[in-house]
Length: 505
Image (cartoon, rainbow, N blue to C red):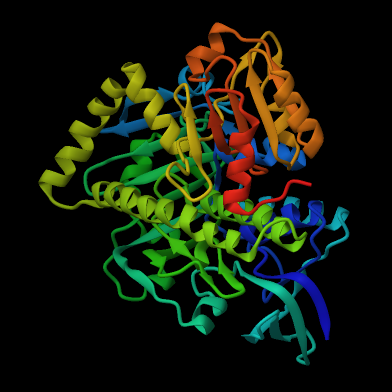
């Protein structure tokens, strides 16, 4: 019987990121996947700014950006012409180091993560399937079917179900997966293209009764995502020639070659629980929703990084098992919010009939253009899309407020004269930030507990970002603000750590 700290079922981006973040924190993992390798027809394409910020912790952001394609703007088309051009840079450049939408096919993404994991001495065990498991009190005992058909028992302190929408882990736990399936069918196609629209930007066509989006990821290549208007029951037999090309033609796009084509149904569901004893659900195993906004894969990666530091703390003996309950409490609300938001957008994009067409073709582009010209709305929409708006305010691990920053917030990014306050966040550790001057008592507290203290000279840019002068911000290993203290009182940090049961050293 093999033993490890965490058994991860599923080697998509969520499972791979969980394995990476646990391994770098000294946690022994085993990761298995029933498939032979990453699927070449994966639909997830977009890597958002918040994911790239977190990827800096393992020096992954640079590699992902180099391998992907940065889409600097999105264009809304209707009636054969651009009705709204929305560049991300003017707004996003003030909020994040990554003011763009990165397009990077999921299969390529998985290969990169797998290779990075192998450099750490962990290999994904392919064609290895979870057959059954039981919570044996102090451990989980899982029965695995190996590539040769034989079975073995694997023991782990915890089990992570990252095995997708049809999760075997979720089914075994009999956890409900409430929601439904949209009536519409989507198609996705990897294409080689030419024409004025093949310019490296994102394009969305909102033609009457039709919809298609083009995401460029290499010169002359892109991913088409569109609606299938064919009413045949067996849409699996459709080819690219069978789907409506009206919206594609509206983009003035020439399809030179179709490398592959697939159809799929879209679901919107959230699991009733994200934790059951020693087992957890992450990514699509916990929540699925429409592809609008490219949020799914990024949300699963966020799940993994949220859970990883907590598992590491518990397994090191620096926190009680109860800390792991905060994983569900912090992530389930966002999952429900995401399903509701993407559901509304999906319903709007796919609405049929004259009124739906009128709203989509005539009204939406105008509103988008107007909204873009209003700075506050522009920033709000970018934060939502990029997931930099996501926060854990009011959560079990969040305390205080200093400036406009609450406990549970993402730390505002500030770059002043080459001094980047995100540079220290590359370390997966607790740390304290002060913008102004640090007191002797705070310096002593940090030194005694081995907590890095980063002090940044106060500037107007810090004030504009919402930070408070001389306030102390205690940051979690996943870079979110745990405590925002207006005064540098170390006893506030001590009280917080005692309350949540965390020992720093």
